Length: 87
Image 1 (cartoon, rainbow, N blue to C red):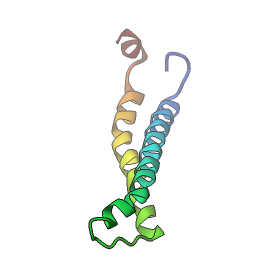
Image 2 (spheres, rainbow, N blue to C red):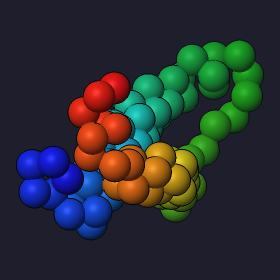
Image 3 (spheres, rainbow, N blue to C red):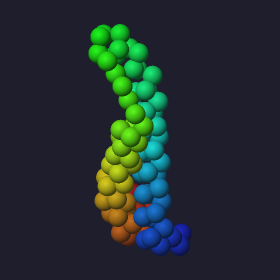
């Protein structure tokens, strides 16, 4: 705000950051989870997977980032510029 950003711009920046972190976390989870199938199958547990649950898990990661990123983003967007620069 001190440099001319509007509340909407600050909110958008924080939400974008939260979604990028969630995207990376979801991608890492899928990238680690799928190759572990042979390791789990080695213990005698049959493992089958399809794209639906993988996309659902990835979507849940994105939704979690959006939900839990919104409140801090809203709080940051409402901070007085003088207070934000002082801390």
